[in-house]
Image (cartoon, rainbow, N blue to C red; front, top):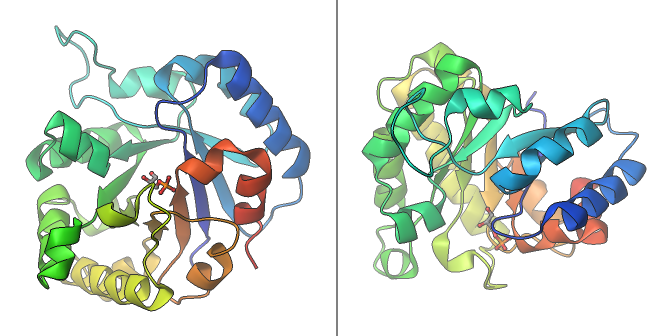
Length: 250
Ligand SMILES: O=C[C@H](O)COP(=O)(O)O
């Protein structure tokens, strides 16, 4: 059985006081969760302040990006160990905003995935097609290509430590979510590809999240799909009541 993983990606929102207030609101409510995992991924600058507040709660801490090198002259970058020592257990890699605005490639994301796993951070590897690719019938081939490139060289054991987030780019921040049936079809295709890259038992163990305008009013139907194991939530994770409702999907 796969344990659902509901994650909030705060992107470049909130300073320390707003972040602390949000985590306090979440932790006051989310006290009774035994069948699902919850994760918050704030900006780097909040990690140190939020880690002690999350300690002992049902929520884990994750980062939104990292470098693949352990240290060095990489101005402005953050190393995997720096995240670990702040209490992160997850790191989002290859989000479409990283791919689109910062030129991240599958090869780079693959280096980061290897580096994260080597140090015991769980990578959330993001894949997803843009609108033109979906409209031209290329969505599956684009996503499969991203998977093969981003996961290259990972053993079956390593793949079990990876989370995949399928985020159709046209659904991010637009309110235009994929239909549950379309999302399920892509998740099943992703799982089939994971099986091809390793074996069926490994593929069956991997958490595949959906992301793209997940809201309180669509989460239940999305989470009811057999291959949707969680959500990577942007905008709605910034509001305590909305994120709590998403975490408490039925
Ligand atoms: O990482 C989260 C996704 O980009 C989804 O963002 P959104 O929920 O605001 O559409």
